[in-house]
Amino acid sequence: MNQHQRNILRLLGILKRSAFNIGDITLVIWCIHAITEFEADPTYPFLELRGLIFILLIYMLGIAISVQRESLRNKYEQQ
Image (cartoon, rainbow, N blue to C red; front, side):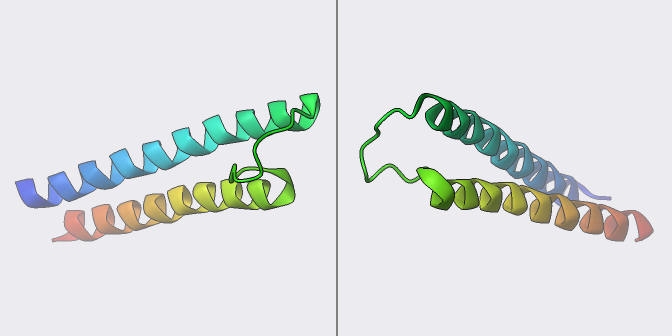
């Protein structure tokens, strides 16, 4: 595995961790909002069911990046 391939895997790892961190933070905010029923501005993107779906999409993006990273790692190791 050459340096370019390692950099690609490193970048995908950073993107995966970032997506999961953003998902974790927004999920906690969503839960706090759901429990306290705090009235947020209507333009806030994480309200109600639409917000939960958006958060799940962030997690799905992280999973897709993770799958792609593992696929590339296996491909690079076979070369």
